[in-house]
Amino acid sequence: MTPVSIFNDVIGPVMRGPSSSHCAAALRIGRLARDLMDGEITEVLVEFDREGSLPTTHESQGSDMGLFGGLLGWDADDERLPDSAQALADAGIMLRIETVDVGDPHPNTYRLTLRNERETHSLIAISTGGGMMEVLSIDGVGISMDGGYHETLIWQSREADTPVCPTEIAAADKSVCFTPDDEVIVHELGDKRLIQIKANRFLVLDGSLATKHLSPVLPVPSRQNLRVPFTSCADMLTRDGNLHTPLWKLGVEYEMARGNFSECEVIDKMIAIVRILRKSIASGIAGTSYEDRVLGHQSGRFQEMLNTGRLLDGGALNRIVLYVTALMEVKSSMGVIVAAPTAGACAALPGAVIGMAEAMNQGEEEMAKALLAAGLIGVFIATRWTFAAEVGGCQAEGGSAASMAAAALVTLAGGTRDQAIAAASMAFQSMLGLICDPIANRVEAPCLGKNVMAASNALSCANMALADFDPLIPLDEVIDAAKNVSEMMPREHRCTSLGGLAITPTSLEIERKLASLKSRSCGSCGCH
Image 1 (cartoon, helix red, strand yellow):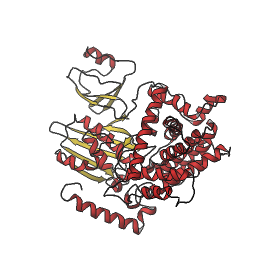
Image 2: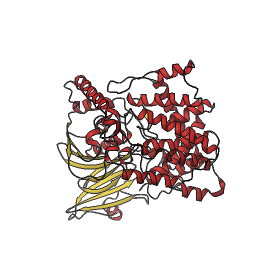
Image 3: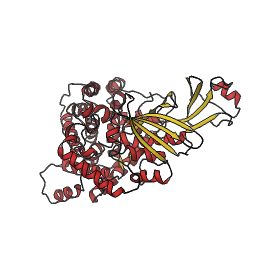
Image 4: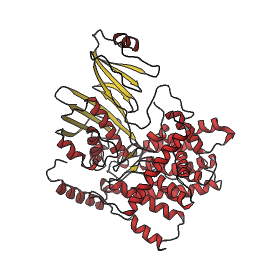
């Protein structure tokens, strides 16, 4: 498995939509599917397994919006995404969405069959959390594709006298030159053969072979034989030993190795994300609107009450609550957010970091360093487990965000490496078992309250860690415990809208009203 990247898997993507697992990942899957068809698609069949999460959530949580945008070749932060269904129809692409009984093991599985006048291809992919995805199959051939490589695919008959290894390919086509970082994988299936070439550029062949080029969809590219200094908290502590390097510096070291960046490049990339987040916070406080929405603009009123001294004295926590709610409102209005680590839990970490840093009169570089410390905690979580609520419930999203934010806040306070890790462990411990039960099938509530709870929890645990409270359980063991809890959690409590608050009478009534409103507004546009 390609090692986790802070910017690919943890702090990112920059996107629009209610859910990174649904919208951003689906968009990336759609982009790869579009490349598989050379950008020419006339018909798409989308199939979701009946026992997965997508039959009940694909429309309201952004899977449709993201997938359609990807099939059209758009980016994850494209302002046209809310209208992608109409744009797909306008492009003359016929769409069918069906529920099937196929027993897919992963709850976020997309089965696509794509056609144009010349050819038909199939693709099976999964969303793995936080906007990340993996292609599992193309045309029935088992394959692994994470969207980080330039992928060249070559189809051939097994009986054909055609090259199947780098030496043979280069001999057959003198213009092709392989490097040691290129990986060639030969997939056999019946009378067919699919040659997959993972590289940092496309291989352009002589045209005698059926070839496809699938472009990378991740901001930090993958490469063969890359090595990261550590993949678990225990490994990091062993390697760093008595140096007690600040956690943010270890985060920089990790991402320098993962992305082949300099230290300045890593910090500058995170500062750029900080600036996106601050802009989104300001737009949220100023006011947002969106028709298909459970909650309206509320953060502006909170700011007014805060400024006039009519709230209980929460110190910097009140500013954090303001920023968390503003970011959640931006997400719910299809504004630009950063999944950190997911869209459903996008506000707890940045709201806590930016709110506290401003209260401490710290600048954007300090905010970026705190987010890099948080990003490294996220690397440990994503490597051992998942950020997907469909797999782990909200403990995978809100719990991870709280853990990451706690480490970030300790970093802002100048705490030690071990204090930051202790805070991360304590914050995660107190959120084990948290279910995912979005009201009216929208990722707004109780997500708003859970983001506020995660940020508040992070602040409390950061202060406890700074006072040297003992977390007792090492962070890696807490992550493993959360994974074990998720395996015992009923499917209905893992982002299916089939349990918890999602099935209360009021939630169902809100969902009916929103469906009726959307139906009237869509008219005959073909959105449904």
